[in-house]
Length: 240
Image (cartoon, rainbow, N blue to C red; front, top):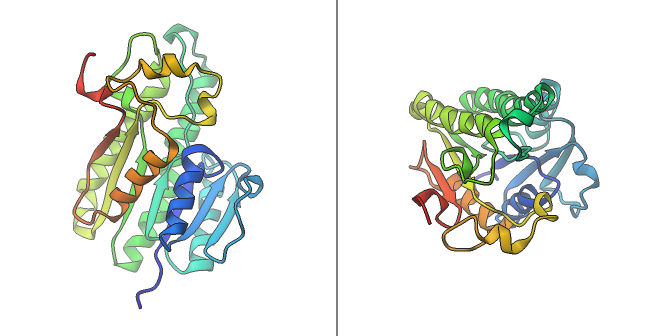
């Protein structure tokens, strides 16, 4: 029997990240889950699950996560870059500190762990995949949801997904992204459901499992690379 594949999930303690961890465990993967306080997230102990606390925007955390995957499970086969922060406000209200926080979590949080993972995948020689959570708003802004500065970072993830899909295609390492619209997560618990429903033509609010299912599809779709899969109730399709 083939050895179990190992997937790293960042931003894993709640919402979309926790759903992604659970769906991979249910499908028989080994999972290394990380966030600042993932050890307090209430995951049931499992021999297939390793937890690493830390800020993924720090290279030392990324290194610890990669080492944990290799030491405990023997490989890194897939990465899900889910860690991300978001806030909506007028462009002129964002501060330099806001910008640095977005860059740290959303971009450096992608770069450091993905570099460690790609090096390991190249050494293993059996391919792999990296799937990132971006945002429908990155290329389909909505009037009334001003999010210019965080969308610099999410748009950057879309761009690097294409670049890396091309760079590592011959090594069978695939790079894809899921671009959610409105998702019912703790990040939006103070927002009115009725107003959230106006943000897609279908008038739907995704739940975390909708996003997790899309991540699983891209992780296992062995000929899909360079794809940004919108799970947004049609928001990317134009005006409504």
